[in-house]
Image (tube, rainbow, N blue to C red):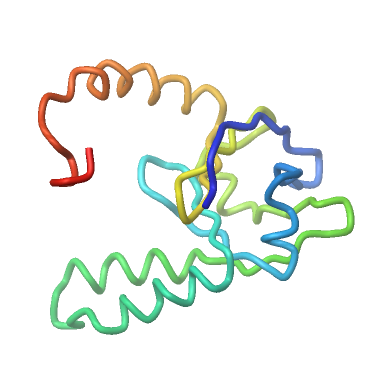
Length: 143
């Protein structure tokens, strides 16, 4: 499970230090791909395989499934952290997420998300009040 908020910086080569608490879990490899709201998703290989299997059962006759799968898989990049715990984020993914220097890495349960720092602040400011004001269960029986 991935939790918390971290604020690493991209170096000049497009590398990012993974939060230390997740390095061991991601040491064998990970997959980075485009996520919603212009962030990047970072999955452990096992979780990416689980998602791949789930998407493979979705009907290819559904246009939304085809569209999502094309973007999701075409933009995916498998990476292995170096000895310092850095990953290289491909230029096309940095461009998609608007990553230049200051980043935010958030834990999002089964994945990490990488955001441009300013984009994350804007998103969070817009969502926190709605989160605080929720008056119904998002997941029935859970919260």
